[in-house]
Image (tube, rainbow, N blue to C red):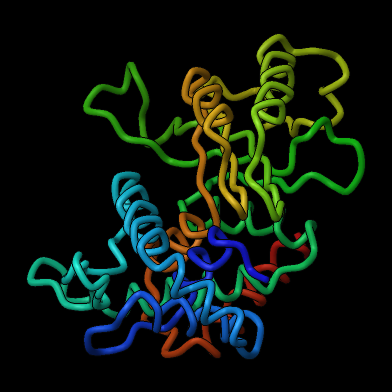
Length: 281
């Protein structure tokens, strides 16, 4: 039986459709997409918890929007828990395509069952963000570092940050089926401290371009199932960037030109080609 957070996550993998829908219909469609079918038990669960599911979906959608992402839905009837996909916008004529591409990207990420491919997903995100340098660490004990990159940054003053200097990214990818806990962030703190202090054990891991750069260092996490509240607080205190798979799909669909991708099948092929290219480097 799918848990409520899993149902909510699966809703974001649904391709948008025209019309107004009840939360029951949307959640059952998401369950069917994830499991191949839904049962009477699923119907009973969704009916029992439809108020909570509506509130949790709305909260997740608004949290994603607050982090810079596109809202997936318009919540049109709070009394009867109805919504419609947010595919029309006067301010962004391409919003429908972006949401469709993002939904397909979420579905593709959901299909990843190999933690190594999820690490390459982190590298792909850096590439989409315009990384000038990128390194995926090899399998093994790499002190919890999955990828390293230099990505562009902008400020009106080059004294602070500049496009040419950028920022250095130290990344972790977590293909967890549950939210990342605080202790994982605390362990990462030790890694970041070792990097900043040029500890000898990391010299063989960090590429020369990373060690020689004077760009600011930022921790970056991508975690499939999000983060516990304690992990979020700890990460915020240390200035880390946290995204989940929905955030990853947002980067995939909205950063760079995607006109060549016409449907979910083409997006799937495109993403696997990008992963294959990263693996060959």
